[in-house]
Amino acid sequence: MRIKCCFHHVVMAGGKMVPDHERQKVIMCRNLSKYALIFLFLALSGLIFLLRNIQSVENWNCHTISALYQLQSRIQSSVIPVGLPTYYHNRTFCSHLGQKPSPEDELEERYLLDSIAWPEPTLQSTSVSMRQSSDPVHSLFAILPSKGRREWHVGDQLEVLVQMHDFQGRPKRYGGDFLLARLHSPDRGAGVAGTVQDHKNGFYSALFPLLWTGSAQVEITLVHSSEAVAVLRRLREERPDRVFFKSLFRLGFLSETTVCNMCLPPDQQPLCNYTDLYTGEPWYCYKPKMLSCETRINHAKGGYLKHLLTNKEALLFQSGVNIKVHIHASGPDRINVLPPTKDKTEVDGGTIKPESFKIEASGYYYRDSWRPLDGVKMRQFNESSAVTQCLRNKVIYMYGDSTVRQWFEYLITFVPELKEFNLHSPKNVGPFMAVDSTHNILVKYRCHGPPIRFTTVTSSELRYISNELDGLAGGPNTVVVLSIWAHFSTFPVEVYIRRLRHIRRAVLRLLDRAPGTLVVLRSANLQALDQEVSLYNSDWYSLQLDAVLRAMFKGLNVLLVDAWQMTVAHHLPHALHPPPIIVKNMINMLLSYVCPEKKKTQHT
Ligand SMILES: *[C@@H]1O[C@H](CO)[C@@H](O)[C@H](O)[C@H]1NC(C)=O
Ligand SMILES: *[C@@H]1O[C@H](CO)[C@@H](O)[C@H](O)[C@H]1NC(C)=O
Ligand SMILES: *[C@@H]1O[C@H](CO)[C@@H](O)[C@H](O)[C@H]1NC(C)=O
Image (cartoon, rainbow, N blue to C red; front, side, top):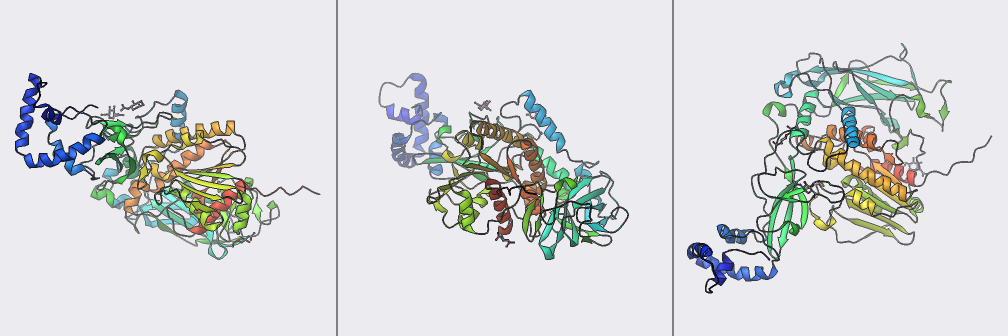
């Protein structure tokens, strides 16, 4: 116990043990206390209680006699101190806190960053006026003829050319616009995502595989202009503080709340260092004034910084003007797709072999059901008994953000026998657990570690996915589902790469010690965007993170549920938590991985 303040001296003042150099302080304390006698009396009675509870209150001294006052005002308070830290606005500050990557890791990081490089506008975004930025209303697309003819068959590829213009109607001369492309047939509940190629001169190509017959309509959406993307990129590198976090510290009835983040400027106030010992993942909070770092009780989203944009920049983010607005066709926007010509191989009554396409659609909707193109046969789990049958004797661990918590919620709603076990966890935070003891099924959900943006996670429940994976026995009856993306969009990509590197190592260790463990990744998905959401959670950030995720797990024995394309291809509005019909398709995909259709015996 290191209490060395006035109270100590006040208590000792009558005794002979006060050294000369300390006497000065005692007198000062007494003088001060004169002005606050009544208050001190009240405070002392509180202090007696306090002294019985406190194990370590550091650095209490006479200079902070006013601490007594602070003490009273802070008791049971959880008010965030005003004045958030200022940051070094340079790109590497955040990512370089934490362990230095090995040379191989650094090489991979450079490769990954190169692979997601996005064309930059030739001019600085600060100097571009909205009038010179991409305008979806002035921009146009055209369906290009196929081999010189306006005739398309299932198995062909449809090509669409997009030309971007600015708000003055002048053609754009550089690339970098973020476009989404979709081909769909509403009457068939059919849709597929197109691949967009940036020609970096104001022209873009959108390529679609033709997978069903009948009328099909092209939809091209400008998500953000290249000028807006430049602003998003600047925010990502320079303002990792635009979402901030907080932690409550408590001991006895003394409590304080301080600001936390992946990186905090170290020279402003003392820090508590919560860097994870196993992974080296950095996390810091400002040290509470009265309490020690060990008294951290919880972790929570603090809030979102405002006023991140100049007035000029704000014009680049206007709902209905240049955020997620459709681009019109100069001519027809739809084609009629004829049945496949004879030279095309037909498989499974209409599904074409994916090899026949150079482009990257991973699947498509038909009658609102997702049909993967990677050779996996999608099974329908329309009855809860089919789900139960599939999951019998399995343990399913779900780790990540709320987009996989949504899967947990879907399962316990859809399968009545899967009963949620009440762990008394906070709503929407978890951890959660559901059990069907008859069929020996266990489903668990746990959120990922910081920077999780949930309301309040108890410190003891704040875990990194890689450490959790290291604690799993694994095996053929274990399914691990991971979804980690949405809470990383405010940080430089290096932060996400580092996190996935740790998770990937843990996945490989798990697969090595327990072959047969099924690991499924859920990719990022599109969400509803307005100006505010764009600055923290734009689909552009998600797209970049998602590309990193796919690249880092490529070639490994893990499976992907392509939430990205499942939301691009669907007609329902984009939502961070996709609507039930899309979740149903995701779950059917997951279950098709867990319980693949029994191979039919080959014959003839
Ligand atoms: C970022 O800022 C910090 C603090 O001023 C400085 O030490 C560091 O060198 C800077 N990094 C770059 C890349 O400018
Ligand atoms: C925080 O702790 C980690 C691990 O002990 C250490 O590597 C890192 O340098 C510390 N950070 C600061 C700012 O002291
Ligand atoms: C499951 O439901 C879908 C959509 O309602 C339907 O198309 C499909 O035929 C059903 N499958 C089974 C096996 O019942």
